[in-house]
Image (cartoon, rainbow, N blue to C red; front, side, top):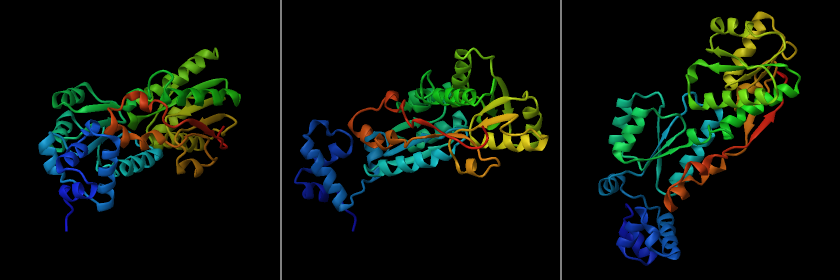
Length: 316
């Protein structure tokens, strides 16, 4: 038998309208004790609000739309799992959308899903921002927040460059990933690397593009001078660089140093084993549901997501 909001009200010792106000995000007018009583009743009874009815009443659903990064990494599944569980505890559901979706299809998703908020882990185009603004949907642009100078993505590139310098490489290069296009995360990592080179008085880094196809990557790796330290966009990019180096006879780490990003399983499967940049637990994402219910989150809440840490392999 389906549990109703009336059951929740009776269990919590409050009126049905109080339950409605609190579960629809207007709990600030009630005491903390009342809010806690309602949330406790919801949990104990296993109450699930009728999403369609709530969407019609509020003009928005209980869905949080997550715009995926262009090239999802191994850490992303951990982030998505943590966000899904945290949101579910508060009656919210996570819906995912590809960053490569056209503005037209993106608009269709917004119109149909009526999300409470859009969380962007990839750069939003001006046309998509216009869609969100027109629909009155709040947007949390995490990709933009962590890509500012001194931000998380910027720090990744700087950490790669500084590690390669410490290992004795006097030339630094950056390997872009074709599939990542010109995403804000890629640009931020590259900029962090450039600024580290500039601060150390080194030449501008050489930039190559890796396409994850052996026939396309050989020339890119061969163009790097002997003694280059190569910072890669992610572990997949680095693995492709290592494979190409092996084919053209470039020894690693003696003639070419390679460092990836994300600490994915592929980093332990390469030969030689890949040096990579990992991250601490993305605990900020676990707070997302609480922030959504208590106040409107800001980009500043997520600028420090995941502290960078070097995992030393045999490729540098």
